[in-house]
Length: 144
Image (tube, rainbow, N blue to C red):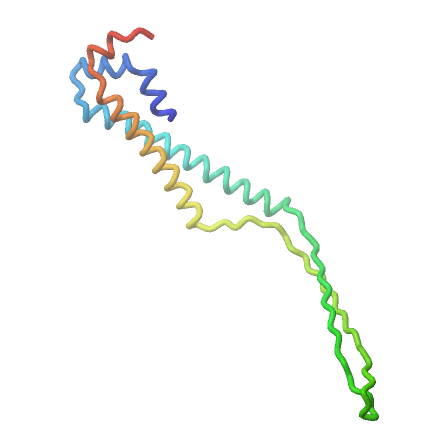
């Protein structure tokens, strides 16, 4: 979206380049290259901020205490063989601590970086094809 906005703001510049002899292919390469550079820069910034955030969560994350109670009732026959039953109850309580942490794997970092670059390329392609369709005379005629 920002690339399309950038192309819309740069109509006169692109028209001037086309009037100077730039081919449509060269305009597409120029705008696509700018978008690729922005995608790479955004990916690097995103990876760095993500690593900082995971480290902060690991260092400052709360520890949760969880406990569970398990009960069991058994029936025993009377020693004389009669029908009198005695009930026994066994209760067990366990307490566990669960620490909040953010996993950080190289594959997650690579996927995030690749998605940032891919997003930049897709946005750049859309803006570049729109810019390449501009006729130089129409672009130079536009008033800002």
